[in-house]
Length: 205
Image (cartoon, rainbow, N blue to C red):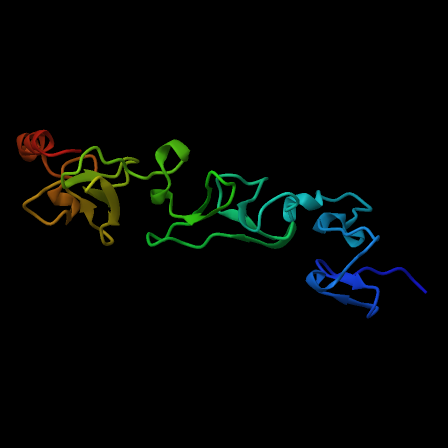
């Protein structure tokens, strides 16, 4: 005879004498462990990193996705179900080939969002629209290939094709070769200096 333990998050059923899904087991007077790191097999017997760093606890959290408590403002998140950690993972890529971040809402839950969908006051780069008029704007963080437009007070972020940079214009294509765009994103020569100044004065940045 030897002591053994069910794999997480299963529990031992005293009736069937087998490890079963915790949703099908009634522990009765027995202690029901819900935290992965409190399972006996996860006990650290020698020098090792804390279990909670790789599998954070879901105790006290609602069902659904939550930010990894040890990696806030990152792509990492955990999924909880009945106080159990059922998944530790990271967000995928957004439409701009950038890793999404896990963004928590006021309830503590959240979802994976592009950094351009997260308000700036919350650490994101979502542009701000000051009016309901249609306006074009360069990327607030200074990325030359990125730009956004405002319509009805809502921003939409777009990206120029490879090798092109944004040009704030209402009469030409907004994505152009750098040689046709003013510095710092373009390389337009000095003879275009006056033209560039006029464009900056007439159009929003």
